[in-house]
Length: 194
Image 1 (spheres, rainbow, N blue to C red):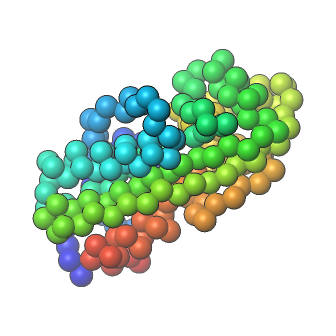
Image 2 (image 1 turned 135 degrees about the horizontal axis):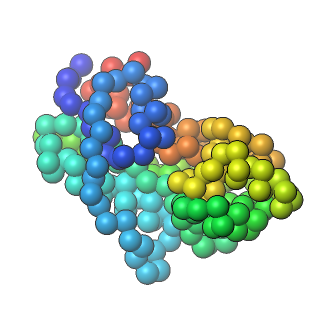
């Protein structure tokens, strides 16, 4: 197996926790990428563009490394749901999602300049949210405060109680990093996973 540094181009604590599951030593570096939306860009395309941009930005600084970039864009009726940032916006997002289906596009890119590695994938997870009362939304927000999560919930915690079902090829994609695909990509790049 080939040994080269592994870098996660993300400051997300959720992605850091997910990547740690694969048992590979890695470091974290902020990609410093402008994440502004491009007018008319579809949600899945935005996620793919940003995942690649994050990985490439860090790979330029570390050409001998394997760099992982990831991004997630949530959509409801073709409208993007950003991280709510506060309780009021979180309440509005959850009320809009109640009784409806949203799509979460999680893109991942693995770039290794010296090794000529350029792999990417976008996983789409459909989340069917059950009908929610205002009191349920308020209790959830008070207990979990998911203000840094697209859609306003944490599926890996109490947020799971908000759903009727989750439709995905990779359950970790909804948290922020599609580990099934990523493990395969890292093996193709020469790492021993597991």
